[in-house]
Structures are given as C-alpha cells and as structure tokens.
Length: 311
Image (tube, rainbow, N blue to C red; front, side, top):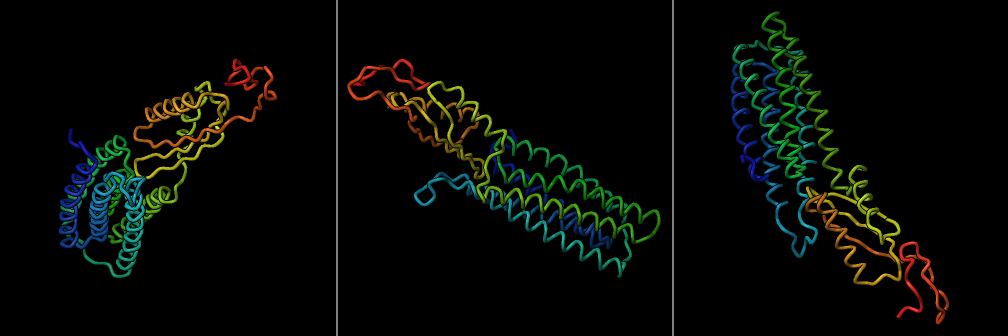
C-alpha cells in the first residue's frame, strides 16, 4: 500500500508540491503573470504545510511519557492551526500583488506554457489530494486532512488562473489576469479561515460531534445493569478520542461485577472508535435498603431480586 503510514503520505505530498512550486515559479517569473505567480505562492504554502504536517505526525506518533501522560496527539491540531494562519497570510500577499498589478500592469508572455503548467498542476493536485483524504480517513489524521484541503484548493485556483491567462490571450486585457489572481486570493482566504477554525477546535478541547456521542449513548443504553448515563464529556486530540462517562449503577451490585461491566463497555466503545481512551466513573443509585435487620427486597429498578439483610 502506498500510504502505509501517515508520515509516508505527508512525504508524498512534500515531493509533489516541491515539483509544482518549481514549475509555477519559473514559468510565472518568465511570463510575468500575476495569476501564475499567486499560484506559485499558494503551492509554496502547500509545500510548507506538507512539511509541517510531516513534522507534526512524527511528534504525535510518540507514545505517552511522564510529562505527557495523554500522549502527543495535539501536535496535529497545532499544525492545522498554524497552516490555517499561513494560508490567511498568503491570501493577504496575493491581494497585495493583484492590487499592485491592477495599477501597474506588466506584459505577460509564454501564455500557452503557463496554461499547460497550471493544467498539470490541477491534475497532479487532484490525484494527491484524493489520496491524502483517503489516508486522513484511514488514520483519522487532522494534519493530513488539512494538507488535503490545501491541495484540493489548488485545483480550483489553478483553474481560475487558467481562465485569467486564457482571457488575456484572447483579449489582450490585463484585467482578466488580475481578476483571476483576486479570485485565487478569495479562495485561499476562505480555506485559511476554515482550516484555522478546524485546528483550533482540538486545541480548545471541543466535544465530539453529536453523531459520535449518540453512538456512545446507545452503547451505554444496551448495558442492563446501568440505570442512566449521568454525564458524558468528550474531546479529541489528533486522532485520539477521550471519553469521560459517569454511570449510575445499582448500589447493591457486586464490585467485581461493576468492574467487569465497565471493562466490557470500554471494549465496546473502542471497537467503534479504535484507539479511544475511555474513563468510566460509576456512581451508586439513591435507593436505600430497608431498616437494618429487617428482611426485604431491593427496590432498585436494576436489581429487583436482591434480598436483605445483605451479607
């Protein structure tokens, strides 16, 4: 398999972006196209993002240690957040360059070559971004998903730049190239905001999606000795989900039985969410026994067959 590890997926992205940056930059400088230069800047950012993703995946893969008992998964969230900020910064740079070219137009040459480079870039990024997204789903990686988002935007921005160059080729007006560069900037800005927003979710310990929490509630509901799920707290750091459950159980149940119940429930949750760290806190129900020394039966809805006095 090509992407046997998330780190290998990031390395493939680095190699792809290195070639694309070199091609776009050379043709952009030779042709003088603002749209092509903005695309080279965008691909340069993708290269930097791929390097950051690779570094974060290297660190996040380290096992828990004394100083980091919960592991290093948040390295991926840090990487995604920083990548988003860099994208926003590049968008500002694209706007500046496009605005300057609007008032100081330059002659554009080698238009057919520029269009060819952009077409190759769009096809290459389409394939690599698809593969990275598959790898992100397989490894549940925030960093790879952010990297895939960068490359997928290159497909659209490359098409926009191609339209600008084609408009200039047909009409001779620089406005087409400049407007295409501005369009590229808008797309980059939107992606930057989205990636930053996604990265900061993990840093702020945002709870898991409602759909995932509902799966946990359904698993708890299927455990007969549990009266209720009193509290569910969740968060995610990199690919690791953390779940804190407070369960109400029969106060007259055997301690060993409660321990077995918690272990079984933990395994069920981990079967649905591999690698999840589950912390379960059982609390006794509020049902009180008959007065000491009197015979009676437990009125707890969970254990109606327990007789008193308990021994």
